[in-house]
Image (cartoon, rainbow, N blue to C red; front, side, top):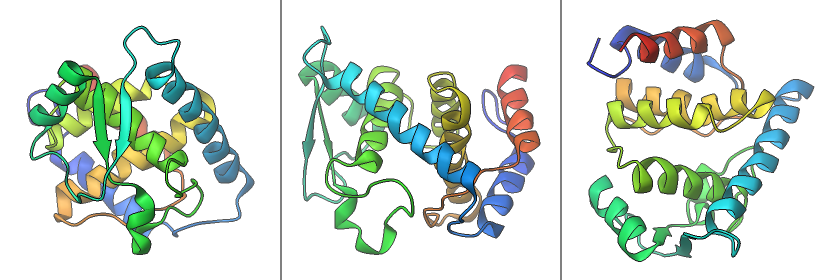
Length: 191
């Protein structure tokens, strides 16, 4: 196990389950989980970027494919200038999310913005496997109910594929096995 991170074998298990899952489903629980995630994302986005926030961060959409060369650069922009640049997911026409709104400023963009602001901006977590695992553990506590389960797919599932295969994962609307997620949380607790 890496210090503070996930065991390599556990990441492989998560990645394999994610890769084996269908891209989308008609399962009512999956759809409800993603609807709940979308609702909770909206609340977090407004809390972090809205006018009621004493330290609001402005989200700016850019055509630049990679607006930051490192997590440190992103963190500096968020902390110093209270600004986050993201490329809208609508620009990635072949990587649309099957259930989260992928329009400019839609639920998927807001999820990415909340993730980047909270985990990379405020906390300074790196873009590597340990940083992304720590980000999921942190954000896992921000969400409740079914939304938390869907978030695990979005953050832990997709990042586990990237860590173990070196390839970006296809966006999926699925729910990972809860026993595997408990095992991943246990990795964090043991660190």
